[in-house]
Length: 178
Image 1 (cartoon, rainbow, N blue to C red):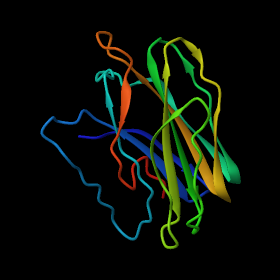
Image 2 (cartoon, rainbow, N blue to C red):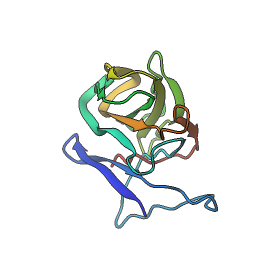
Image 3 (cartoon, rainbow, N blue to C red):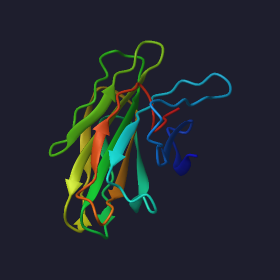
Image 4 (cartoon, rainbow, N blue to C red):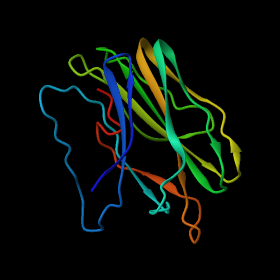
């Protein structure tokens, strides 16, 4: 099953959820279901080489950025070398021009721009962290000012494998903002 790693409110009515689990090799897709009317922005990333007994080196953290074009993911201080920094960005606007930029020094994992009916623009970026210490903040710029949140996750590697890598599994929705 899925493990709920983070459930945080931003913008007073929106939520960001972070789930993790070990995916069976035979699984090629999965489904999330909701009760009632829910607008979502979701991203799914498959991470290979992570520690399946203790996925996160540092607890996931979220910043409620308010209404802005500058989405700042919080800094985290790693306690182990060879981690993977994942930063997710969520911006809620009924605008098709609400794109999110990839922060400098990070690689894009996946992104999706909201439409006029489901205005959730989302983006996930990654960065290998070979050393211990503070990551510093990471900033994404949105195409329009809107309610926004950013989260930081630090994935720790298995000791017998190289740095974890995030593999894009493009889907318009995960780290749920609602």
